[in-house]
Length: 151
Image (cartoon, rainbow, N blue to C red; front, side, top):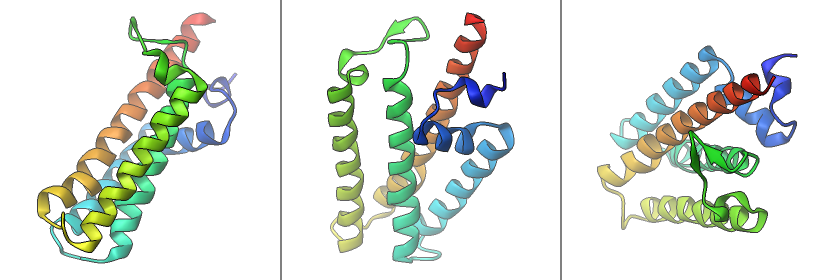
């Protein structure tokens, strides 16, 4: 059985495998996210399209995949239990919706100007998306290890 088929079959799982399923795709996605986010953060290319792509779409996609993996986990991660709000269906969706609204809200504040400073642009388009991608890779690998140990 391949590693990809061991992960629960859903759209978010499919996206996760395509984002972080191999070292090559993970490295490529991390590099693209860093490069595009830095271009926007330093105003090398101050395009609203870069803000949308690297400050809204990518973080929302990473958030959806991350919350899906947390919801489908066994309730424990590296020996620690995950709070019930993250594992229960309604709590998971509520927290995911809250995070998505924060991402969109901060992007709007950057676009309209009140938070259009380097620090906020950097956090929105580079730091948080890269941290979520790294965490997604870490959780993906730990779930693969858990599935391999179960066999």
